[in-house]
Structures are given as structure tokens and as C-alpha cells.
Length: 638
Image (tube, rainbow, N blue to C red; front, side, top):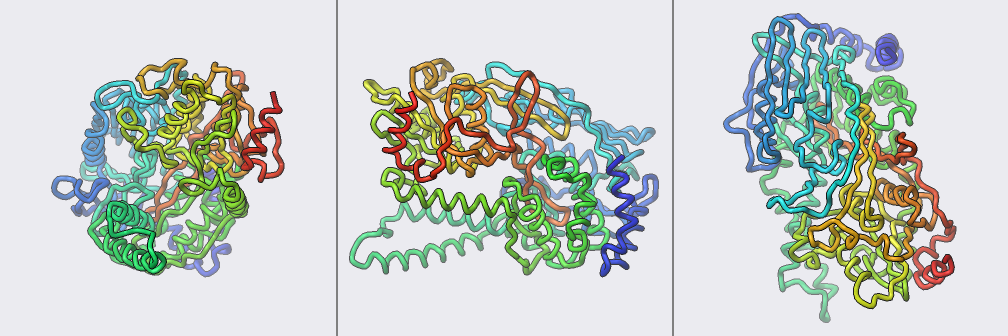
């Protein structure tokens, strides 16, 4: 009811609030009538190439899209085609994945049913989409480790069916209430006509694919399924840079020694940048996407896109209540974004999205990936929220501080992953990553600060070696900004043995708590040999205002367990998993999603967004990195 009141209020306030758009918003208010349920529409089918995640993987032939009433930049997809597409994409990723779409013309209902019995109900009579079990329908495989999918597609078994790194030993799951998406409330069309059951491509993308990090993009020439964080020029440049660096590291022509080393390095850098530009020019999904014709969006697309964006954020932004946002449509008006989002200038609309995630949401997980293909000259104004600015300043300060200490000035990005000072072992992790390397084959080959699991495997060997002098183990998360939840759980299991992870979904109300164990010594068994717990070691964790997301989750879990003491100052927080999103005109961004990292007390769930207090406060940040002094301090604590 609150949402409906807000929308009605918006319509009554539109003209005086939007001044320069008064004439256009008057038209906008009329537009929803063309999408009225039961009205006849002029439906046109057009077929397009459909790229599926990679340049080489295409839909056989061309894929049908539908357009209504002459609006050629707002595509719809028939639900039978949607089911066929989902089956085609996921069949190689999850065993027995199958969706059927059964239509009942008399009731205007299309029932989509998964092979696991979970359903999605599309009601074209009242423009509603209903999921009795949202995550049951969306989950790709019964083999995934956690019901809500926070660990992604991390499987408990490898391709040969052998135990792999993590296993769940117990879990409790609450599926939550049925979720009903009311498209009519937002003026979002669902069209049933001529035996077709049409839903906007953008709506299907947001509620069926974004949770997997994927999005559907239409640029007038092609339909593209891509990772949301990859379909932009910046991501393409980074990928090209990594490929070039990999090639150069294998080349004997490049060295940094000799009398003319400085001059050689300059020449090498110039050659490297030339190689990057060449890579950028090669055929890619990004180049296909950006090849779409530049220009403005039609007025119907603009109206639809703003309503759709408001609906998606109302349902999927995990911190809406925390930010006191009752309605995102009202939020757009209150912040001045509505005019830019509805205007003809696509660059300004993209800038409004950039401002929304960076300046207004400002929550650490919300970020901007890339502009729409329509935007020829982006405004690219720098917008950074006050919280993120303070965070970045603190991160730079701590990074500079630890560079001053010899034991912290080794390795990648100034971080020595593992080293010992007297009787104390220090393990420094600035993020949580796993690379799906051959951990059981040659883990030492992957022991870099880019691979958390390989680092922990190596550290465990060192700490538990014969005649080891180690009495204290300190996990340094003072500059840890998060990363993959599966890698964070792996670290928790290493310290705690049995590691508990609780997650609550703000979209459906679903809750889950799972207890994990990890295989650290790579014997494919999950036992006391894989943990530091129970070995008589003193366990500590360093935290700071930079410890964020999973870098905040891990110390929270330590705090609740009680056997690992926290040193430093309060962590930043960050409870929501990153949720990639797109706009209907092709902008890519991410927000704090509906999955909220939590801890459980007396059977109830509490999120970790406000950070965790240390057990022992260290007020001077230099003391975190003076390992000699810190070791002496730790030895004085017991």
C-alpha cells in the first residue's frame, strides 16, 4: 500500500517538481495506458543473433524478440522462448536442469515448472509474477553448498565426484514466504496476445539472471547474455592487460636489469600499451555490444526503464530500510535524479546511475561498472560518497604505514602472505579469492596473495610442521576488503574447525544457517587435522575500519565463537552480498543485494552491517604492522 501511495503522489507532483520536463512528463503519465491489460497491441517479431556469455557460444540460428506498438528499443520475450533459452544455457552447467512453460489461455496464466518441482506463476490477467519458493526455482544445482547460494556455484565435489575443499555437515533452512512481483503497480507491461505471452527482457534479466551475476543486453543489433561486470570498456581493458602481462612474463625480451634498464622499461611500457590496444580492437562481446547505434532512448523506453529500475531496487536493494527509502521512485524525485533518468541525454542518465550508487547509496558494495552502448561521450563526473571517501583515505593510510616495516614490504601489493616473528605466525589476507586451481595437484604453484585457499594450505603446513616454534597465529584482516564468500568460509574452518554461516534474504524472508568444514591438508577428509583449533595455539585476528564485507564477516564469526581474539579497531561492516544489475537501456552497476550476512543468537538472525568491536583495542595503527612489538604485546596477553 505504501508503494502505491508513493506512486500516486509522484504522479501528482511530477509537473511542478520536474519543471523543464513538464511537457514530457505529461506525456509520460499517459504512456501506461498503452500497456493496459487486455488492450490490443501491434506486435512485431524480429530475430537477432544471441550471444551467450562468450563470443563463440551463440543461440542456434537467430533468437526471436517482440516489439509492441512501434517501440523498437523495448524488447519482449515470449515465455516459451525464455524457457528454451534458460534450458539451453544451464544444461551444461547443472545436471537435469529443465524448465517447462505451460500456458492456460482461459486464465491468462503461464506456469513455469523446474525439474525439481519448483514453479514460477506468470499471471497475465493481473500482471503478477509469483514464486512459491524463489530460491528453489533459481538454484542451479542441488550440489551447491548453501541453499541461498551465497557461495555461488562452489560445489562440494570435483568433476570426478571426490570431496573438494569444503563440505557442509549440517544446515537448517527456512524457505521464506511466497514472493509476488506486482508489475501493474509499477506500470510494467505483460502482454498476452495471439498465443504469445510476452514479458520485458529487462524484467526477466533482473529476477532470473542477475542473481547469477548475468544480465541480458539488447543494442538494436544483437541480444547478449554477459557477466554484468564484464560488458564495459574498463573491464575489457583490464582483461586485455592481464593477457598481455601473461604473454610478456613468458618472454625473454623483457628484463629490468642492465645499464639502460630505465630506458628499456619505458620502451617496454610503450610496447605493452600498444599490445593492450591491439587486444582491445580484437573481436569481443564488449565490441559487439558497443557497436550498437549511438543516440537517445525513445520516450516509452525511458518511462519503462525508470519504472522498472524503481521496481527492481524496491525489491532487491538489501539496505532499503536502513537507508530509509520507502520507494525508489520517490527517492529519484527527492535526489533530483528523476529528470536525468527521464531525459533524452543518455550520458546524463548514466551519470545519474553512477551518482546513485557512489554518492547516494555509498555503502561499499554498490558500484558502477559501465555506460550504456548508447552513450557516445560519457560525462564521467567523479562522484564519491562521504563514507567511501573516508574508507579509501583510511585504506591508503594503512597501506602506506605497513610499507614502512621490512616484514610487510615483500610480495604482491606490499603484502607478505605468511611470515613468522619468533613464536608468532602472521597470515595477511587483503581479500578472499579462490581460483579453482589444482589445489590437490600442485597447490604451491598457486600460493600467491591472489589465491586465499593456496595461501592457507601453505600456512597450515608451516604452522603444523614438525618442531614448529609457533605458539600464536595472527590473521591480519586490517586491509581486507572482502571477496568470495567460499574462500572466507575456508579461512573460518581453518581457524575454528566447524564454521557457521548464517544468511537472511530480505526479498523472500528465507533464512539459512550452514555449518561447514574444510579440507586444509588435502587428504580429502574433513577432520581435526584440518584446523588450528584444539592444538593449544593462541589465535588472533587484526581488524580496522578497512575490514569490510567478508573481511568483516570473518571477525564477526570469531567474535561469536569466542576462541579467536580480535585486535585493532572496529571493522567497517558490510552485510549484503554484491548484486549485479543493469538498466533497460544497458547501463551496468551493482548494489548491496538482498542476501545479508548474519549471525544467529538464540535462534534469531542479526546482520553484521555495523561492524564488530575488537577484544583488545589498538589505537595507533603503526602498532598493527610493527610485528616485533606486536609479537611482544601478544605474548603479554596470556
